[in-house]
Image (tube, rainbow, N blue to C red; front, side):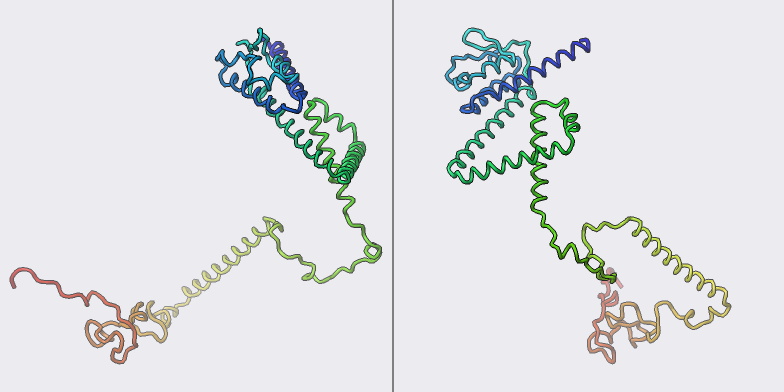
Length: 331
């Protein structure tokens, strides 16, 4: 297909969709949602089963579809979608394809539109019962529209006109609604802001020179620079390097001293210390046991609670406490 013909077909398709969208919003408010429910069901059946002939034929005299065809523009909507009149029936040719976003979505949007109209009608009926409230709300709505129009004029109509170019009617309505809401919010904030008193405007507030009083408390939103953390990390690494260099320098001095290895601390065993018995094991503080040479007998018989002259500490059992193995065979 040539590009020009393809573009023309797409343009015609979207023009038809726009016309369907406009016709869907011209239905009678009463019974519009029920009629759109039936139209949605018919359209979904065709979209989901495009080759089924039974879904492409609808009788206008069907009592179940009376709610649909009693609407003035429902027939025009279906004809714009591609349905053709055939006696007392509507037929959709096989050459016509219904699309979900172009047709079903538009029907859903129309249902939402009529639902909002229904809610507004209920709200208006409630306000009609209270004339004073209805008058106040009406004045507030007029005031809001005037403020929105004034802000739109002051903010630059040229920019607004440029933004509107190329937008559909629905998009233009949404943009106008957003502008009106923004104008209402800005004017409300300006009117509710407290005006400064004469004492606040004339008397300057003294500034404190104390750094502690000016410092704000820490908060989760006080973001710190990454460079500060990196600087502290580098300082810590430098201090660690200094300590290592100092230890290395001490070791070099020790190696350079010829009498360093003759000192008492150098000859001391690694497992002993000041005030500690030489043959005491690392777990003796927990068990109170000592070796056979310091215990005066084999097997550590003097350990445990009440051991003769020893600390009252529990004795850890060793392999010597196990019974001797049974000898097998003669001998």
